[in-house]
Image (cartoon, rainbow, N blue to C red; front, top):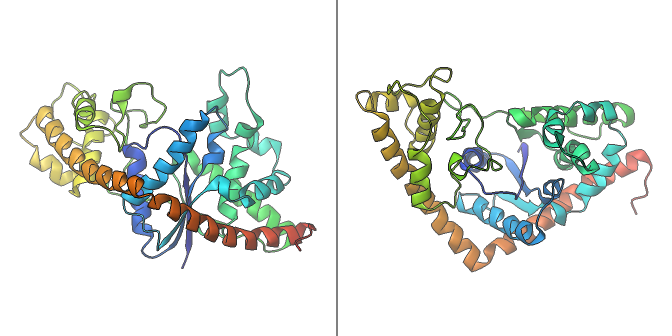
Length: 328
């Protein structure tokens, strides 16, 4: 089977935008060899509270399982528990160029206005390249904000292969095909992507939010004065965002939702959306709490660590042999 690799940082709470992506992970496990990683090493490129980071690492793994990831079909593990990620990242740093990293727009965004910027934040894309290339990955699910990083991973792999012979599989981007797109925007500013870092708590809904918090976030969502329920990203971004979420959670096509609310106002749409979202989140939260209480998530992570170690060692030894390192 073709192999897919993806990682999610255990920082902040998983919101609806992340959830749409993770739902695609569940679909992929049926016909692909999926490797899903809690990328906690990426998290420390910015300051973290150690206790919170540790707890959220386990909680994120539990959420993976709660939304339907099957540990019998998928390798789920924590990045820092497989040392090959750090080893390969160092090697790839020696085959990456300052000019390439200087052009990374995410580095420019995250470093803007800061008095002190760590080298970890600067070389973040090289660690991401190591994550991907370490598992002979064929496909990487990416959004617009990560395309540039995947392109760098491809460039490094091709450069290394040209110098030392075929060593790395050159990964391809995997773009989700969803009707009208499934990019979830902030409730307070529908022209901006929903984000963990937005300080406005009502700009987003996380998978562990209470029903009352969900209701407040949706009912306060920015719309417009037109009151026509129509999907139009340019002129009606707020309504379009609500329709996208409704479609993703109900399974209805956006055109069907438009017809259903043809003679209704935004209040009816928002009220029904609150119920639809809370129904699905209730199921996820019940399973999430069961998984945490049972302790099974730790067993899953241990098993995932072992398989990830086996797979990564094969590739890392291949690389070491090519560049002249001893591997006995």
